[in-house]
Length: 326
Image (cartoon, rainbow, N blue to C red; front, side):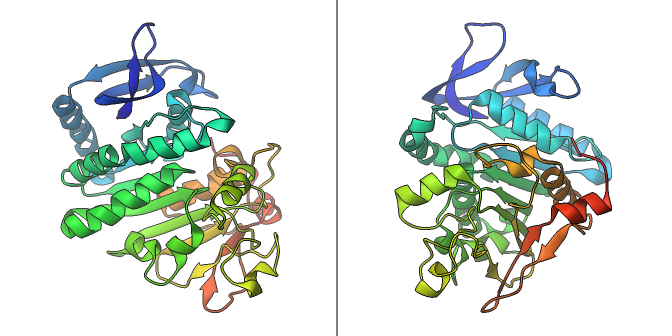
């Protein structure tokens, strides 16, 4: 589902980095190579009613494995980038899972941060409406959001909890990758994390001290981001004194909550904003969360003040397995 302006001037469907009140609904079939299946694709746009009906039929056809995956892309990601991430996540399943990629109008520029922040806020009501409609028809929904997309996903879940608690219970798992959200607002007592966990959901949050875009976001906002484990912008002096490597991603010790520090992932990139998607250990951990498998490469961080969390350990992963999920 796209709230960006559809660009149909070429054979391959694309979306411009501008808002559109005419929402687009369609199905995309990746046709690229096994290594990069998203590089080429076939697309077909449908009326909303037909799209929802077809999607529900796809989910129902899975038998005992009925599940819907919804992915929300992040800052500086266009339609193609969002499709790539959605395909990456979907392919971690050992079976076919119908996947919805929610596309909102990102400018796809480093200096377009404020534009993107405005656009994700504008798209919020569209995302709220789509999620509300789908959870009324499908009773096993997994939500994955990256970066700035986490803002819309958290907001949509919070509102759905209040408006229709019964339907909201159909959201079983929530995964936030490098979330560009105020850390304290989410993790404090009575914060958003309690709303995300409502109804016994599983919630996994991936953070890092090496995430460069989140360092920039932290400076712009003045406070720590949920996807950063850096302590220097925390809300108390004791934690600030722990510095950049203080592992301040720790959260309340609540059933279903896992906050995982990914700095230990072997990554050759500069931005380090997508380690979960771009590294073997990151994808392996994400796959384990999606499919309820064990995560022996995680190391538990020493609890502090009743807060707890984990870190990914490359050495443990290398000792455990020699594959690289794709």
